[in-house]
Amino acid sequence: MSLRKTQGFVSVGVAIAGNGFVTILKFIAATVSGSSVMFSEAIHSLADTTNQVLLLVGLNQSLRKADDKHEYGYGTERFFWALISACGIFFLGAGITLVHSVEALLHPEEVVFSPLVFGVLLIALVVEAYTLVVAVKEIKRHFPGLSWAERLQEADSATLAVLLEDSVAVLGVMVAAGSIGLAYYTGNPAWDALGGLVIAVLLAFVAVFLIIRNREYLLGRALSEEIREEVIELLNKEPSIDKVIDFKSSALAFGVYRIKCEVEFNGASLLKEAYRGQTMRDQYDEIDGDFEEFKKFNAYFADRIPRLIGKKVDDIEAKIKKAFPMIRHIDIEIN
Image 1 (cartoon, rainbow, N blue to C red):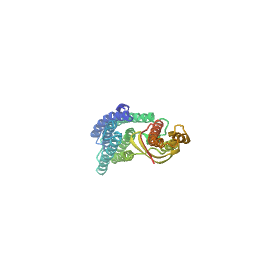
Image 2 (tube, rainbow, N blue to C red; image 1 turned 90 degrees about the vertical axis):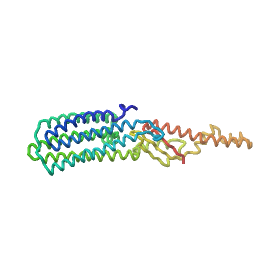
Image 3 (cartoon, rainbow, N blue to C red; image 1 turned 180 degrees about the horizontal axis):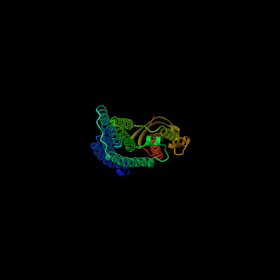
């Protein structure tokens, strides 16, 4: 799969362009006005842009083909870089914003009124709302028919990060406009600093959520309970399988899983197929007390049964992959 067709590429690419442009405008407005909350917004947009570049790096790295060092591929690169990105939101976005806002609250300075500030906020609102809409559309396209709770649970880390970051960005612009307006109206710069604190808290919440989410994948997130039960049901329906003793699954990439099953085979079913339609009495009569024929019969079965089990395992794996395309690697162990 090419990078352009990878889920998350469109929303991440649009977000990088939009946030990069908005970052420059916000730093200019913060310098002109001396507003603490505008500086917080500039840092917010800078953090978003930097973190989204990291997401793009992760998407690109995750497409590398499997090699001798990583036989299951590099799919988890996506989650590693998304985790680094989330840490960036926490330390660069929330951390610097919090420190600067607390300092502004303890040592307030007059905020200079400038129409430029509100003009920049209006432009930022339009741009960030557009990037948010792109992320929303991408999630809807990939997960039609699901509730938003289910979409957030299933969405890839890159698209989810853009969705949450841009949601906070849109909300942050509104908070900034409100706090700057209150600071101008009341003449109290504390409102401006309080706006920065609100933005810092929002960023910290998003960062912690994304850190927890990507940690799950890096540790090897399992299939959902519903799909797990469906796979086990498929295995139990196989005539050659008596029961499933153990079942484990782990994410290898976004939407790609590996499963390991320990099963108990049905010996009678295998024996019936090994006879190729003949009864045991027929085969016994063919031997007719001939010891050499008896040895050949045993050698035939010693060779036939493992081959038959191997073919059955291949057939079962093919059925699982067809029914559940997200399962790419299957290990079936016989008890």
